[in-house]
Image (cartoon, rainbow, N blue to C red; front, side, top):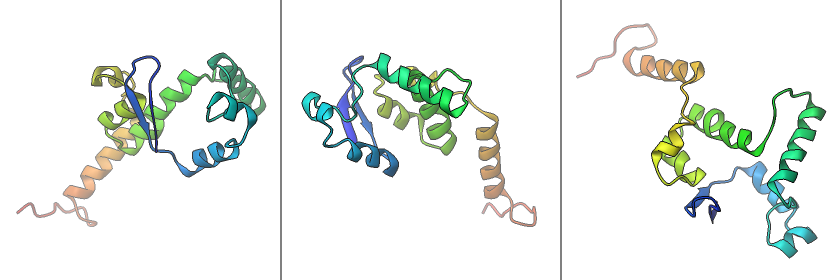
Length: 135
């Protein structure tokens, strides 16, 4: 888990890292730039990072404009909300001061509605389609 203060809000961000992210960080652990600048990755600016993302989009045939903001938004919606991570948890990971800042990411998708209705159906009905006893 990584924790650090947001430059924008000063609020501490807490981000549990998945194994692939930890592998990438480990790969650059001894990189000269990372050591000299006390950085996790050898990227010296948001501008440079966005340029790398645009290059990757071209290589991969992705027509969407990839930016750090796009990645942040995708993380908040597709990756976390779609997988039932509570919005309060997402707000903490994004370093938001209040829930209103996080709610702009909380677009309800057809996939999310479908998952929630399937979950409700499983709670209410058995495999034969009969209503489960509630008492």
